[in-house]
Amino acid sequence: MGKKVIKVVLNENIQKLGKSNDLVKVAAGYARNFLIPNKMAIVATNGILKKLKLYAAIKEEKFKIAKEDAKKIQQLLEEIQKFSVTKKTGDGQNIFGSVTEKEISQTIKNATNIDIEKQNILLPEIKTVGIYNIEVKLLNQVTANIQLQVLPESN
Image (cartoon, rainbow, N blue to C red; front, top):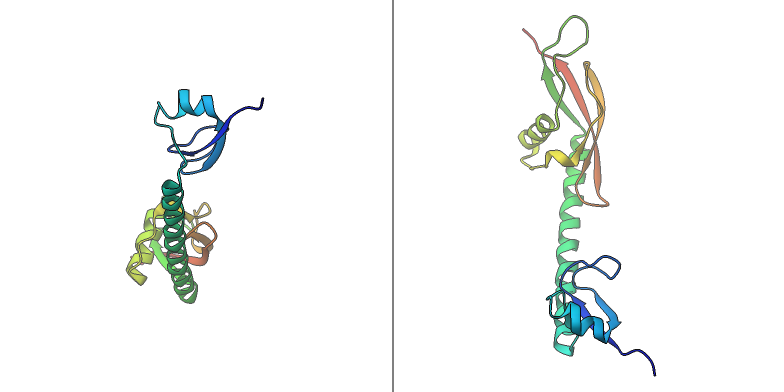
């Protein structure tokens, strides 16, 4: 006699089993005695499967819209291409302090009125006056490459 297997929909991420909202096959006893009483999963009925498909379609549509918006922002940033920041300099080309992600985010906001989270800006160590290539992550697969020109502050 074979093992009884049932389909359940997970309510949370479970290591080695799946992520939240995944449809998985598990042993009937495991589902009945552990997953369902601990509210970690529910039995996969036709109604629940329809609801899952609807949620997946909504999520896909939201992702498409977000990706289109990110592509528009990428195009805008790459059209502008170069942003400038002024910093106090010491002797020669060295700047006092460094340029931060927050400063770059504010510069982009001033120029384009677009908010970019500072954790989405990847920049090299900037210690001197010059032009630097900066990568701005807009979405998982969408990044914009811009140039940052660091200028000495005129006294």
